[in-house]
Length: 129
Image 1 (spheres, rainbow, N blue to C red):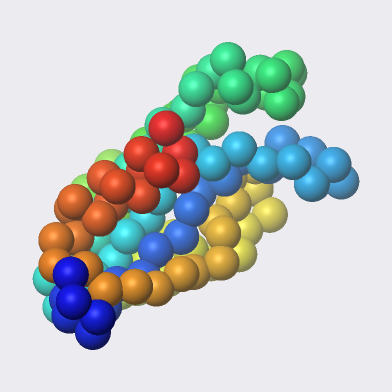
Image 2 (tube, helix red, strand yellow; image 1 turned 90 degrees about the vertical axis):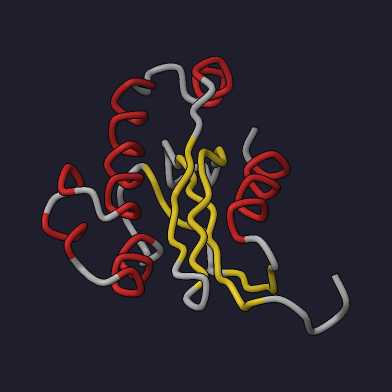
């Protein structure tokens, strides 16, 4: 893609932070928002073996359930609760807001894309899977 081409997008990693004091984290998802393409999606993946190597007492299924809710919110699915009914930009900002739960977003990063779904797939493969 030539420099300056494509649509602007923003994304954040979703991370499991089982013990804030230790500062360790495991990347478990990506949230990507491209306003002009009308695209907002969160994709997640929890590798139970990697999670338990980092934090043996963490319930991987509970983490996966939490992540599924975030995916529902991004998709605007009513299963995500009241936040899922908001406009895509509001949902994105809610998803990437600092959190004190076990699942926390990274800082937001930006870029340009010609294909938001492909960019999300590339980020997932590179940063999570």
